[in-house]
Image: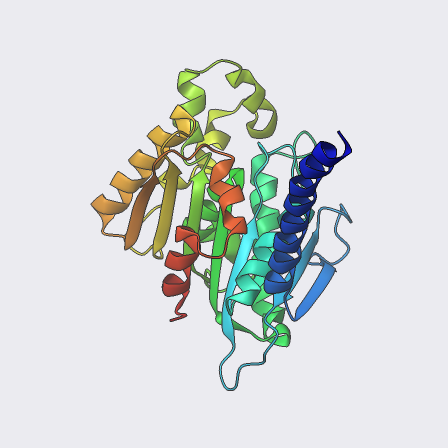
Length: 293
C-alpha cells in the first residue's frame, strides 16, 4: 500500500516541479532590465492612485535613436482594473525591445469616460515629454489597449483635440493596437440598447447622447488617422464583434492603413491573457508594426 501511495505521489511532485520551473523560467525570460513603478503623470492630480504609470525598459541600452514606445491601457468595463494586473505585458514588451508604459486612469462612477480619455491623453503627453529618459523614442509612441482600454486607445489615435487642449501642437500617437476593443461606437450602442443590462453603461457614459458620440472613436476616424492593428476574438461578445467589423469597414472607406484579424475560438478575456506568451500572434504583428525586425 505504501508503494502504491509513493507511485501516486511521484507524478504529482514532478508535475508541481515542472509547473514551478515553467513559472520561474517565464519570470526570468520576461523580467525587464528596469521597471520604474508608480510614476505620477499629472502634477498635483486629483487622484493620486489613478494618475500613476509604470515604465518597463529593456535591459540593454540602444545606441543612437531610442526604442519604440507602447502605452498600454487596461480594460475593466470602465469601472475597474489596474496597471498592476498587466505587469506581464510590460515585461513581455520590454523583453522584446520596446519601452512599455502601463497606465492607470480614473474610473466610473467617480468620472465619465470623457475624463478617462483626458487622463489617458495626459499619460501620453507625459510619455512624449519624459520617455527619452528611459531609452524610448518620443517620436515613436504607439497606444495599445484591451476591451475598454482598446476603445480609449482608438480614441487617442483618432481624436486630435484630446492633445491640443492640453497644450500639444499635434497628436503624438503614431499607431494603435486594439485588442478586442469595446466602446468604438457607444452612440450607436446606447441608442439601440440591444443587450441585457445595457443600462449599466449609463454610469460611465452618462445619459447625454452628445457625450456618447463625443467619446466614440468611430466618429473621429479620418484619412489622416494613424495605422492600426485591430483584433477581435472569434467568440467574443456580439457587441464587440459588430462594432469592430464596422470600425474596420470605416477604416477601409477612408483608406487608413490597418490590419483586421479575427482570432478563431478566442473569448474576450482570452484575448488579453494570451499576451502572457511571447510568441503570441499579436506580439509578432506588433513588433513589425512598431519597427522592430
